[in-house]
Image 1 (tube, helix red, strand yellow):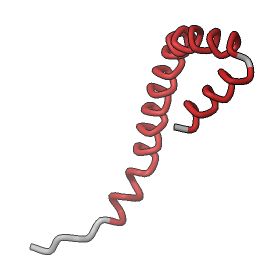
Image 2 (cartoon, rainbow, N blue to C red):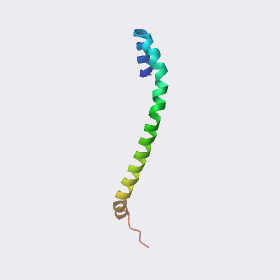
Image 3 (cartoon, rainbow, N blue to C red):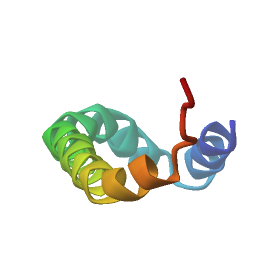
Image 4 (cartoon, rainbow, N blue to C red):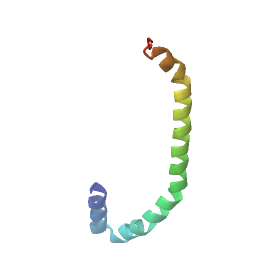
Length: 67
């Protein structure tokens, strides 16, 4: 909602710039989409490494089962 209100303010102050922003926003979003996907993949790999590093401690901390 804040983004829309800021765009409306820009539309009132400088309507050509607001129209250019309205046209360029989807193009910029499409250009940045691969970087977002790369960030998600890197985050997943780092979470995997973190889980592997913490696995021995989690196994040692687990409660013992008595039969």
